Length: 179
Image (cartoon, rainbow, N blue to C red; front, top):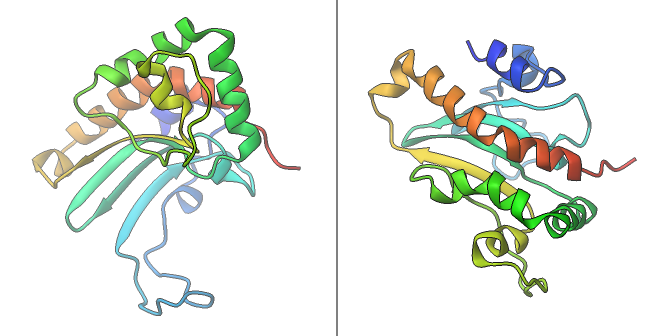
C-alpha cells in the first residue's frame, strides 16, 4: 500500500519488498547477541546504495511495545552535515519554512544526537536545534493502538511522509556520498 506513495515522493527509492522489509532472523555470524530473531521489524525506503544510512530514508518500524515512523539520515557523514549547515546559512528563512511544520508538530519530533561541542551559530533556536545535530531524524513513536491494525495506518504514514518531503529534499541536496 505504501509503494505508490513512496514512488510519488521519490521515484528513485527502492520499493521491492525483499529490499525494503527487514528479515525476522538476526544475522548472528558477527553479533554478540546470538538470539535468532530481531525484536523489531521495519520497512525502509532507501536508495540502492552501499551507504544508505548516509542518505535520507523514509521508514516504518514496529516492535512489541511501540511503532515508529518518519524520515532521517541516521549515519550522516561529516561532509553531509557540513553541507546541511551551509545550506541553512545560505537561506535560513527558507529552512525555517521547511522545518516550521515539524517544530510545531505535536507528533513529529527531531530525534538525533547533538554535537558535544556547540557548532558556532547565529540562528534563532528554532533553527539552531537542527544546526547542532550530528545527523537528522524526524519521527513519531506511538504505543500500539487500533490505527496500527487498520487501513488508516497507511493514511497516517502518507500524511506524515508528505509533511516531511520538503526536509527530505533539503537533506538530499546536502547529501555527500562517499566514493
